[in-house]
Amino acid sequence: MRCPFCGSEDTQVKDSRPAEDNTSIRRRRICPDCGGRFTTFERVQLRELMVIKRGNRKAPFDRNKLVRSFQIALRKRPVDEDRIERAVSGIVRRLESSGEAEISSEAIGLQVLEALKTLDDVAFVRYASVYREFSHAEDFENVIAEINAKISRDTIAD
Image (cartoon, rainbow, N blue to C red; front, side, top):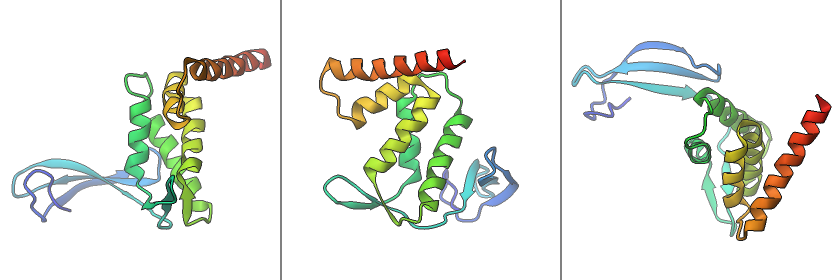
């Protein structure tokens, strides 16, 4: 593994352990050249996924883009990083085990919306406003009404 600080290709693993979600291995590394310490994660990749974007353009699936989408939607919200990681890992597992090699960006977006709905209502509205291309204030009102209706149903069910 190349050192992110000095570029040396001779780094050493000092500690390995399963990550919190047990779907990856966390490795603490040290560079003998510059003394830099950093962490890497190793994950199993079941298949190479391609994302079919709008306009039928194809691009390789990038887990980091999915993580960034969550982080942007959840910016300045009180949601623990572990919960975000579990949501992302769950989406990736579902995509990889779907049996499909090509998945539409819309299908991924719907899964992100579902996950955000359970994590944080504000993040859900933020993401929905971009994903559903809101153009009027009424679009926000409709989604907020949808969330309030869900809260009312959940309160009555309890």
